[in-house]
Image (tube, helix red, strand yellow):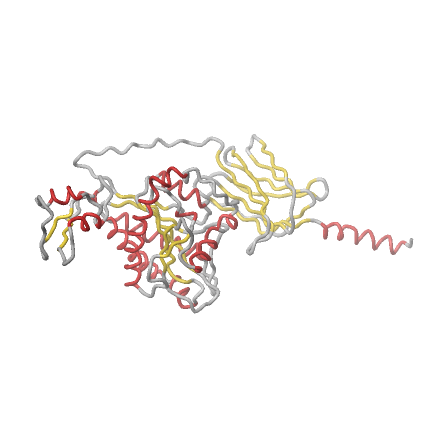
Length: 431
């Protein structure tokens, strides 16, 4: 073998070794209130090993036979991570070091490619010592009425951008903007308090969204989204509630499947194992919850119809995971089609976001005025319900319509028998 060939091989072998190495690129850091997520895009399925070191606290990620493409992101204002750095060990193994501000628990998983991403290594870091905040029990007397709690869920977030418009507008950004504006209106209104399920650009698992709403004892759960379809001409708002028996239309089923895939995009394998959805709870509670979900949805749809075009003039039903809280009326609103160029431009406009927030607020307030939860400010300030008798009405039908007992209806109106007359005004008691 000539010296030239040997020299050429000595130059090519390192290049061939690099060509066979896995590439790790586009490292991203997402900061949530209770955890930090580190995402590494990989060119192929990679092995990894994680271990922690103390004094100072740091987490080490070793990836055999891999190299880093590009730079690691700078860390700003993360409660757990101070900085990221990388190096090479054992010749061709990549090591990433996470310098920490405190000891953490780390979970990792390698996700297979989907329609948006290739292979991804997900690292979830949470504080090793969780600080338990004392929960104050709410106590009220006749002079104190609690506020209704509205859980506002901005769809998607973090790794999951949701639908993306022709100009690059991301659904997660629009949803959070509207959610914040809506929360501000609710918090300024008497008798109401808003809880943002997602406060920033990070992902929250679908079942965790339900748990957070239940933790805050929400009286209503509202999930905000921006729709998309393969036909850019499709436009308008839609309102959805949970369907136990299947979707009310093919479009509703397609949309529910799209939204439920968010857990796969966000980095959590979705499994329908929510402990709250046992058969007993469903039988006892969820039928009533669905009724109130439908009442809230109809009110919201009416307000959105006054703002602009609606895609469906009836409340739609689909099997959205995020609507499966068994004891909280839950509604999902698709504010507009982000895939429509004109509606995308409107969704980007802060003024239109304000208008959407105002329409949603008006719908929520009207819903609680009509159906106030017991013991709330709205229940205390509710005007007596009145009903004007029409031809064909009976006391039994009126009692059934308003979900009150026949005896309570008679007592509230001092009626001893069943005799009523057309034009007579009845007072409807609380159900």
